[in-house]
Amino acid sequence: MSSNADVLFHSCAIGLGMKIEMIKLSVLVAYFSRMIPLFLSTPIWSVKVDDECNDQRMSILTELGKIIWTVMTSEGRSEARLWLCETISTISSLSSREHRELFLDLLSSKSDRHSVAAQLWQMIFEKRPQMAGSILARKSHMLERFFEGHPRRILQWFENFSVAGEHQKGAKALSQFAFVNRDICWEELEWKGKHGQSPAVVATKPHYFLDLDVQRTVENLLDNVPEFWSSKEFSDSLKGGEILFIDKKFFINLFLDLMFKEHLEELWKVIDKFLMEESFSYLCQHLLIILDDTALSFFLRKIHDVLRKKALNFDSPSYWLEILLSKCSDKVAIDQLLLLNALYTKGRQLLRLVHTEEAKEEKRE
Image (cartoon, rainbow, N blue to C red; front, side, top):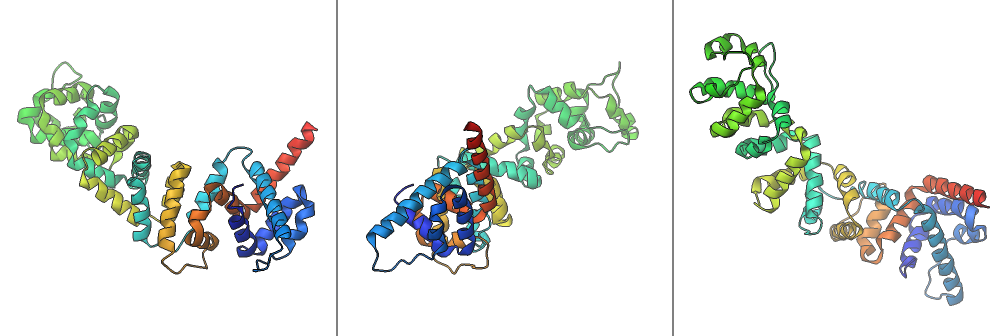
């Protein structure tokens, strides 16, 4: 443990009360039974300190921290990081505007902005696809390259004709555009039968569109009818966002280019709105898990900048973390915070890890 172990464990012993004492006691039963009296007594941090006694206590605390850390990270740090992200997500002293600014700050970091933005668009696709669909609808001409040379994508979007004539997705756009613009489009329709169909016949029997050779027809539109890709009919088919699920990776990359290369303001407005309207808990649970330690530390420092200026909510289950971040976030390393959070919030899991480790040691012996 680092030289800041005193900050960590003093907070643990003084600020967290009986709950943390009992968790420590349980761990000590397995490892340091001789230290039980230390944690059953309340530490006294007065001006007059017995240096030798204090050094001994700090030595024991540091050794204890190392052992718990070893047990806790025996299968890697990922679970401990997940526990911390869960606790951060319960912070309740932030307004919607404040938590929006925290996540926008992550998007200003050159090292992390692409990964954070990509995760954000993934979240938007899954929870509010219409928000992304509305952007595609206004930029529908850009989807020509999405379909060029991709028969599977063409069929997934345009081969949605129905017997009842209630065509869906791209099929609806194609049929509507073909009728409205039959002077420039109808000849581009390719039929599977020996002869084509006239607009008059298909108008009375819309199920005839089921005989359309969709792939060849759309390829003709790509080559010869550029007006289709900017048409109201095609644009309207994109508004619901269903097209995003044909190839989410393609659209995430498209939106990243529009954000960071073309600096399209519309996309930033969508991000801004999404961050404002979604809960801090939901955003933390989906965004913090992708951050490395440097980015997570940056995020916690930003929380510190907000919390140190306001009254805290002591009814929150994360009040101890809010106090710690507001007072000394720059003095506690991520590893220390992972350990403190595990001790306070995941006592049973730590005990299970201890018992598992004990069982492994017994087998080795």
